[in-house]
Image (cartoon, rainbow, N blue to C red):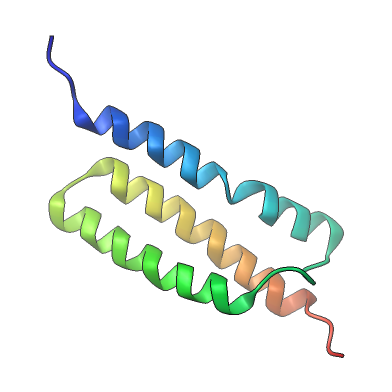
Length: 88
């Protein structure tokens, strides 16, 4: 039986990428981003961009897709943080 390692990558991609959805949805729905760290999401976004290019270099569809989708979700969260941030 031949096992394709991309299957493990796809499962990991779905699980890790879907982890961002609840935070983005909550921020969008409540328009509240008080507990969200902009710095953390900016650093994460840069890391995701690096992983995306790494996926391109090694020609791994699971790494490419996971980081493309994660990057978009994190970018949306960054935009929501900027838009909904309350100045104190």
